[in-house]
Image (tube, rainbow, N blue to C red; front, top):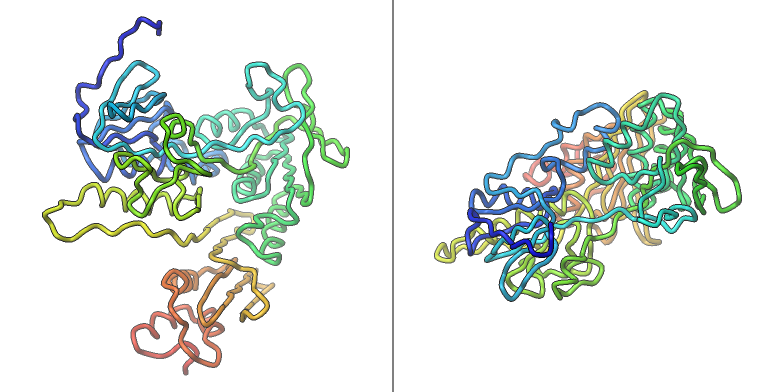
Length: 432
């Protein structure tokens, strides 16, 4: 577009309606909940999709259409928002479209962290070398999927939840996978040492070579394509592909340029308002109570809370509930051989005075651990049979004192229905 092109307003956009920037999980859910009067602006070519399931697309278990989100009933614009005019309450888009808003919702999500590796940014245009892939969007996923062939050598950099999921998916595609993790264990933010070892064993059984306490220093590029990954100790890993799974960073550039309060994320209060009362923020880009979640469950809960707040009728007399935070539960299913189901919540690492109940059944391949602090459940990890996870998660989310009994958690772990009975005033946990 030339500089003389005139902005074109969106004729179907209500002048005082809700405009959502970002068609990811949070933004699409807000638009879907609010209905036909909403304008949703998303820059990806693909219809909104569930980013949590991208690894299943990479593994070949699902097609892109399977993970599509319900269609938003309002106006959907496939373009990039480039500027927010707060004084005029307008969003300016890359294609020249100008969208007026009464309330603006920023659901701009997050960008993948690209580590400062030697050789990674050799291109003057900032493009990654051939064969180096981030793993964040559907385009990332489809490009990586097209590049992977049986027997291809792949180095996955990052052993958190995303890196573990990517390594498992690539191994299922027949690639020779090496997973490098700078920390001392896999998924160190969610798992305790024992459960992390079990995840590592599962990946090893799939043929993944795992290196922990292993820092990557650079990538070697030949004729524009990656050919090796260099570790900090000088060891070189020959490779055909490299996958960057080093975490995400809130996407806040649009908010910063608009002069909103931004720290790690876009700062919001319990009504999910930014420093401008006409602009809200939800999902990966939002910082609530000093915390940026970067996870699906908080994004959905924030979206639902915001939709209820925006849709409430002042004359109704029943105000919508503010958002007060999310207690996050991590669920991960790693299909076979030897499928592994995992759930983790809270803090699985006990303090000196905490009570810990831990059960391991090597024959059945199960592991269960819960941590109690001050009579309340504060964290846990379960691998294998997850029958108890629902009751445990509800007890943790409620933050209620556990029933007083000689062996409450032991009984709960072996009889997951016991907690529900105790709450109903029937058999107490640990009772006979």
